[in-house]
Amino acid sequence: MPTAPAGTLYRGREGMWSWVAHRVTGVLIFFFLLVHVLDTALVRVSPEAYNAVIGTYQTPIMGLGEAGLVAAIVFHAFNGIRIALVDFWAKGPRYHRVMLWVVVGLFVVTMAGFLPRHLMNVFGGGH
Amino acid sequence: MATTQSTAAVAAPRSPYGRRKTTRGNYELYSWVFMRASGVVLVVLVFGHLFVNLMVGEGVSAIDFAFVGGKWSSPFWQVWDLLMLWLAMFHGTNGVRTIINDYAQRDSTRGVLKGLLYLAFAIVVVLGTLVIFTFDPCPANADPELLASFCTA
Image (cartoon, rainbow over all chains, first blue to last red; front, top):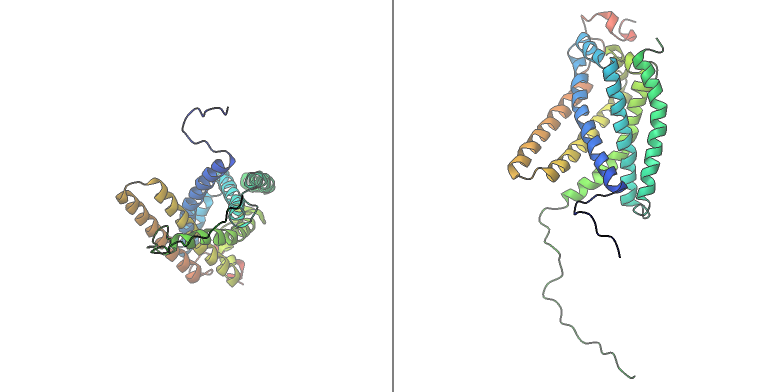
């Protein structure tokens, strides 16, 4: 006898949570993109205006924010390729769960390459 | 057992089978294809952007007006950033449109949210495109200390 579900709330596993994470990171990246185009547009105002605003991106708190942003982008990028493979590769749906762990692995490797370098640049290890 | 299978003649249906009548074209199909195609290109464009701006040299702490001036004096980075701007804005706007369609239940709420979204899209794409092409890396009367080295050379 299969055990009856405790409730009617759908609780997916890797498939559902990767979908949730893809949405959350996507919205986050989109709103940063809007702000980022506006701040870059200040180069048309004056060098002083641009430097003043970009200076706030170089503070420790914003530096940590950038690390979070890059983490969101890296996950969204690798998981997006996974989604395309699920849709277009004949064996994609069968391996979607394995591919999520490949995404997580690539994420860890990429962030391990990025974080030390970025944190050194932000917290002034080099200069 | 000697049963013979007879092929009974079946009357032709009055109309061809159709699950639903298509009234809206294939817009959502093209949007689905676009998300995957633009996504693959954006991985290359955005990773390249992040690598050059955050990893090379002193990363984010080296970004200033002169840095942007140096990049956008090259057509390569102008085209790179223009393509990235347009693809990312279409990709992101389409993604947020999907999310609004999923969660905003009242017609009026959906209408207002999508109106704001398309307004933001138009402002950011037009502004960003103008900035990339009208940018002067060596503006007159600017403090030479803040400009790229080729401005004074």
